[in-house]
Length: 63
Image (cartoon, rainbow, N blue to C red):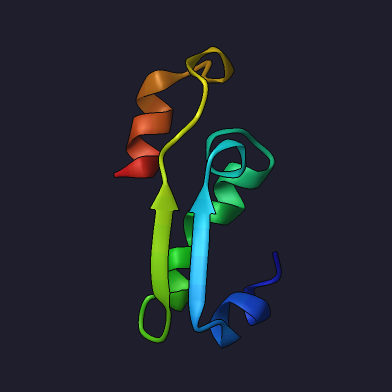
């Protein structure tokens, strides 16, 4: 997702595979920071444990 889109959004929903696996995880992690002042942000923590290869990194991104 382009940062400009996130900046213009009233709502931002993140979660699941996009926030846990690269190449999307790094980009998804930055979106709340750029949208925080203007958007309602929701985060879905549901993901299959088998998809997580580095649980420490996944937990860090979710915090």
